[in-house]
Length: 372
Ligand SMILES: Nc1nc2c(ncn2[C@@H]2O[C@H](COP(=O)(O)OP(=O)(O)OP(=O)(O)O)[C@@H](O)[C@H]2O)c(=O)[nH]1
Ligand SMILES: [Mg+2]
Image (cartoon, rainbow, N blue to C red; front, side, top):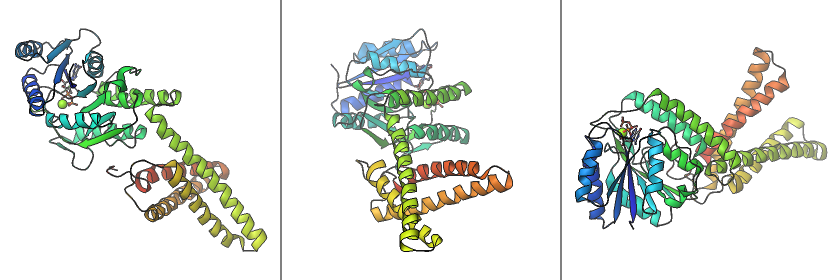
């Protein structure tokens, strides 16, 4: 039995395969790890397979699966999950874009209790070297979409990650496209994740396989995971929906506070209603802040704004922005487009809500180490 299995998906990597296998194996040796290297190849027409077979003669811990049907990167990695002969799985590209030196760290973090460990390009200390603008834009777009589902993960589409086998063993993965990690996050069985930064280095040799089809498949995958999370309330993406609902409930409680205080101050204390409204609004903001701080965004890890006072100030500023959006939409739709004012207000409230949720999520209750 091995300590860990490093899965390397390959398609036409004859120029890189020997180097990556040698490097990974050297990392095993340096760190006293009993590691398996499992190459999952989609029947490459070049020399990839024969080179691996040759390496196998001297390294018994190297194995290869040659797939003949259902060509695809995610499918290959998923097949690797099934055939790996250990409980800790690491996925790494063949083209030396990912540093094998981080594998022992990933292994130790999983041994220490994390379910998923992600090599992140988008957190402090991480980065991407030598990428043309087009690649950066596409990757940031994909990352943005992925973070809608998993806002706590800075790089939910990384190709370099480790998982405990139990995370994927019974998961209903529908592997497709390039982003197998997103599928694992969306449908795997996990609680604790950790990210470690690394610098992605663009491939020097071999050919890139990114096509338009990849982007379309990715959008389908995001939608699929969204629906999956609606039906599977134990899934990770559902945790985020729960926050949206809680935030909405807190918003409704704020309306009740606002109305109640306004009524009380005007009717019982006799304040002028506009003055009373000022107090009502402030109390509603305080009410919402406290509920969100203690309930909606309660988190085991610490917040970047570690002082509650700082979060309270941030919440005020963001809420003021929400108010401006709400009133701006109300005015625009009603006075410029002639929409019925209650209808305009509904749209305004909705957009104000979206603003308040996302910006507060990212600013007021940003987790430590999280990158906006
Ligand atoms: N089995 C299998 N592996 C694939 C397939 N497509 C890509 N790979 C491998 O998956 C890894 C990542 O693919 P890359 O082509 O490097 O993707 P990328 O890093 O987004 O883009 P470039 O580095 O610019 O090519 C590499 O090890 C590829 O050999 C596939 O269809 N099947
Ligand atoms: Mg690559």
